[in-house]
Amino acid sequence: MPNFEKEFGVKATVDTYESNEELIAKLQSGVSGYDLVCPSGYAITVLSALGLIEKLDASRIPNLGNIAATFRKTSFDPNDELTVPWQWGTTGVAYRKDLLPAPPDSWAIFHDKAHAGKMTMMDDMRDVVGAWLRFRGHSLNSKDPAQLAQAKADAVLAKANLQSFLSAPVKAQLISGDVRVAQLWNGDTAQAAAENDQIAFVLPKEGGSIWLDAMVMPKTAPNKKAAHAFLNYVLRPEVGAAISNATGYGTPNEKAAPLLARPVPFPTPEEMAKLEYIQDLGADAQAWDQLWTEIKAG
Image (cartoon, rainbow, N blue to C red; front, side, top):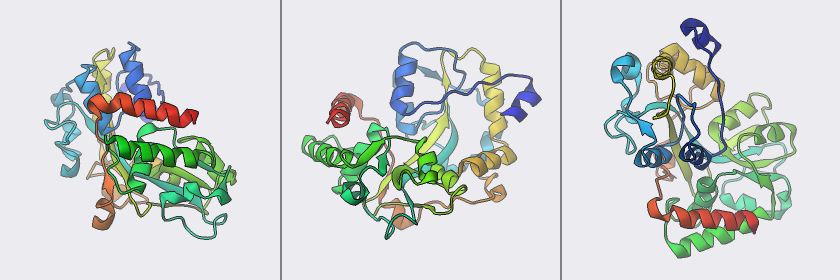
């Protein structure tokens, strides 16, 4: 960010959020001042349907040509007019190799009382409920009441063993050993592993989520010229590589790939068969929200 600020003579402010739902709620409530936000694919579908984001001016972003074909014409932006892909990754289990007798291979690890108080799952409705749906062999986008009821029961059972529901901040606890098993993204696990080589990542045998986050522009963006300049800047090969080298996540910038210090391999065909993209729940979102409230209170 400092390099961008220096080159373009602007001051950038970065804000963070714990989940896509938090971001959607912020924009729905009328919070303004954001020039760009970075949601996951399904949340972009929601933001677009709500009329909260606008089309980008491709003529101001000539580096769009650097984006790999895999990440173009997505289900949430079929005409490539709303988004600039940012990073992609998977959600699985981070663990301490030195504190577990064997690598965990299933979401069932969170039901193991032997690690009670030393585990966390993410503070994210879609990832937690989705994990327990996959555990029972269902789609993580299920809307079936019986399947969701079972996922709730599994989540409540796991909650009894959790230290908390916690997302990115759990990295520090993995490094210290206060947490030995955590539901986490692959890139954040890589960041923690760079500080403690006893930290590793595994995709549970039942599968999990694969996601693509992308930059979009709110309709209320006050600095649209600078926002377009930033989007074009991050699509430079050397900048795209620097971002992935720092985050540990995969880059959608195909010209950045040869510059990566630690290449992030795309999931194998066998792994892809077990991974799903999170989809917009539509009218069923309210039922999921209620389920999540009950899980956290249970």
